[in-house]
Length: 93
Image 1 (cartoon, rainbow, N blue to C red):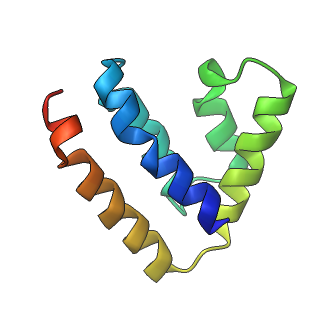
Image 2: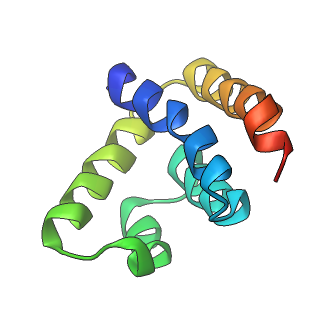
């Protein structure tokens, strides 16, 4: 799961660089990390980004993995997210 997390967060600057909007992606990442959002609520809020059943299953598994993480791990993910948003590539947007 840590590899998936790292890959997902590493892709953030590429999305920012492409100009599709860090705001939308930021909201999705925050929903994914938030331990107070359950899987059903998460899927309902990101439904616009799910083109099919396989993608929905992947998002469900990812959210379930984040729900099983400790507070320390989630805080580190948030710190990593902020480091990416403060990077040179996202600072332009």
